[in-house]
Image 1: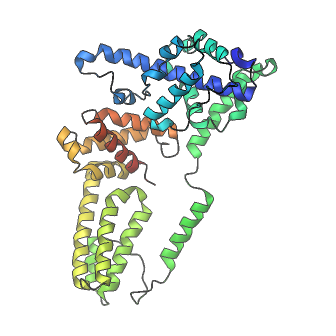
Image 2 (image 1 turned 90 degrees about the vertical axis):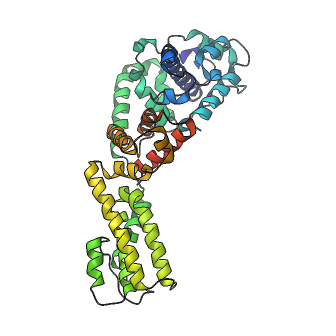
Image 3 (image 1 turned 60 degrees about the vertical axis):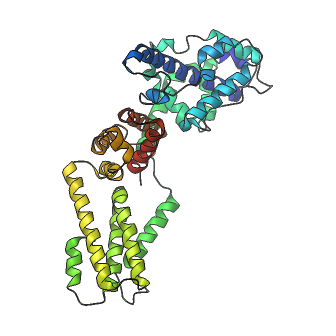
Length: 389
């Protein structure tokens, strides 16, 4: 398709034009296919006008002004460039995952609108050679979604000069290998952040703490340790400080448990603050921490009995008292199990935007009984909990 425009622009320009239109055609065709299926199921409660019906199947919602049939009908108009820009803007507006990704410069004077209209009007079968199976285009979508701005100079191969055409298969293989290796082994943090984290841990584990008048070390925050400390000599203030610090170490050692432990840590910090300001004495502070330790052990016992991973159990724990889920009859435990299954399918979602989008889309399905705003809120809570680092 790029050859239709190549005569009026250089490679660095025409590849952007073609790639954007290719993506627009792809998502519009996928949308229309799902729209037709929902229309057929309307008597069974399906809603073709609900964007979440599409997101639940990993399909982008395409607003009316961005659908291919609308653009094709206007292809010969001199305003076609602005219409395409409006279509891209509408897609970004209704699909936050694409915000700032799509090209929106088809209305620029330098772009030949007649050639642009011809390209849209004539290329009805861009994706038909895939046999109608849009899953065969997952590589195209991945490259567009993840690496659009990173491999600009490589996209000359979309419409190569004759001497490059023998190398297309080799390039595709290398591109797929590169994406697989990058997704599997991408670092989660940079060198500076990793160094800062290790330095902080080194200081925490070895430094002398001032303010309570004694050397401190991290200890385990549990009922057994707390009962043991009660029988030891020494001021209760130092024991309280060590226990709170031990709870922080539990969170540092297993960040995925933070959604369960952070609320306990906040309450423990308030107990320590009240102790330091003399609102309570050391004995009262130890009793309050004992209640927190018992609550922590109860949560950990429930987590073990659930059979869920720490991340999935955190989803249950955060949403266990959610009013919207209770009202809709959705079990937080069942939702946590569904989240765990989806996370197993998309294990690189923390660093891979495409896998994260599919994970997010999969979470809409078990939440269709919720109102739209509540559904989006719960999905964001689950994503933040699952992907916490």
